[in-house]
Length: 476
Image (tube, rainbow, N blue to C red):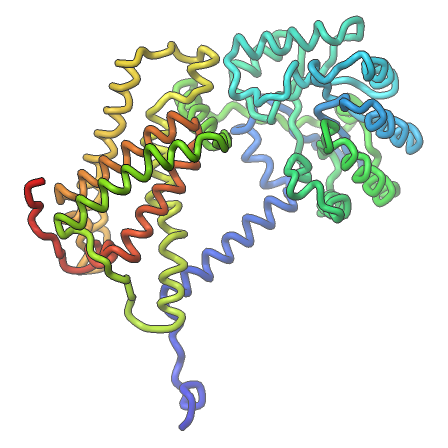
């Protein structure tokens, strides 16, 4: 028998496979941008990282500002080796010093940095500046100046972790600093990447992508990163000896044809408050110590209530979701569903209901907002939960109205009492998880897992996209 291609019949790519291919293409494009860090991609992001900060220079001079953070190293030999290498190559850099890193053993290196290069303020501790309140940020700046002792006041300040807000930028300016970010960062703070043998070659390749004239390169000297920075510098300076001059921030700023590129202030005050709150939830890693307690005392009980309620009411049934078609269609469906669910609804809903509506630990700790009483915090959690539960019927009706599927059943499903109780159970567990970890990622991951299991294995896909199969909820 002749194949479909031989008969001239066009083979149709299954819709789920098309979505997987499209998502793969988008992911490849995003990874390419993150790896190469082209200037056009850095420009729109900089205002949301640190308003008013300089992140690059517009110049025809083939020069790059070399900046080294988290210095001096606890091992003076590493920082000394970096200084010796720069001296041998006649290169000057801006060293962003952390006051708490200064010890009697490495303090003599500060004078050498100030004499041969220039020093910048990287605050007193190695913490994210965005997690500090304005008073704590100002105290960190002042502690750095005290730790610097008799050395001259630096011109440049770089907030810890790169992120800052409008008030912090104003504090820095009032104390005589210019804020500086970076436009090229080889991810040397990621241990899984930076400790690889091939990392110096990667950092060199990344810097060579396109014209980097006027760029600000950041490397790190703290801990094990110092030795890796030394290896990167050896390769970078040798590779680009004939292409670029590596200079300090002040030297590049003083170039006759240089124009600073400053991150604007894109958000009004009230919107910046919620952006900062959401940002803290996204960039805060969950503590590893919290997982066992959350699983044992929050998620397993919540899963038990959800399964018991669902199976007793007849709402949940063990049922494998099989789309029309076979082969790639089924595989694409099972791959696409958890990916889609991770972003919508899981990530979107957790950002809105927990990330925006509930206070973060950093806000409470640094005085950004008045610490609520237990009753006030309970009321905020209850309000967030109520919005989360009762928004589902409205969203379901909207999906049905916009859907091209004539059998779309989101509205009826989302109005079922058993579904709303299940949403309340999931929302309560997510709220406790967020308050315990202060990170959005645990509730996002658990949320995505629960919804994916419901759609793929417990009848959720048919309930949303076919005829309703609900039984009346029996008295419990």
